[in-house]
Image (cartoon, rainbow, N blue to C red):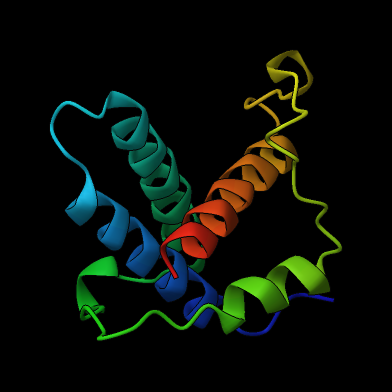
Length: 113
């Protein structure tokens, strides 16, 4: 069974990317890299599902419900960044990359909310 709200999920993630990108200072390389990782993940999903990212308009607030529903629907266990060993994350694996991106999205949205 496929998650049936992919356009909403992709739009939410794209809006998170836009928000992070807008808040990134030029000297914050770590946040710039996180922003790029989120964007590449979103771009791949948009391509896979035939969604044009240019059609999304920046909202006043980001609807994170589709992100949390997607995580729940797919039983994705987020990483605990305080205990993570980067050797355990293989970004070449789609599942690990997705989990890594969604963990960043979760932490970013919880600290800026």
